[in-house]
Length: 138
Image (cartoon, rainbow, N blue to C red):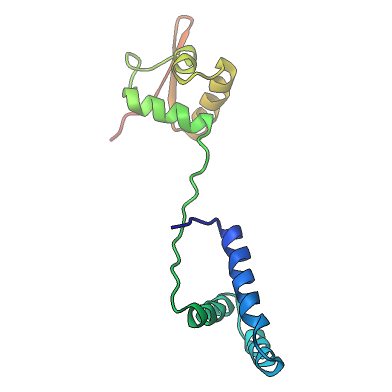
């Protein structure tokens, strides 16, 4: 089975519909064009799809979810959840997080700041060390 992105699906779909239309006489082409002019977005796609199914006898459509790239913010949050960092003792410093994730410390610091701004993590400073951890769940 072939997986297509939405853009690739539209290109393939329009190509197949174009081939379908190429073998129609002018009267039939005009009738299809008139019918398409009366339809809105989804109905137009459904109509074209129906014509293709009529031509080929069958069709299978499968949606493909596109996984968004993991950001440093996501990686930091996931790491803290994985290690169970819910207090000072289990929390991690930005250096520890950076080493574990293989990221630059500045990248981790910026990600931590975004998480702090959103209230998704807490920070606690003792001496020179700042540890980051998740707020306790109720």
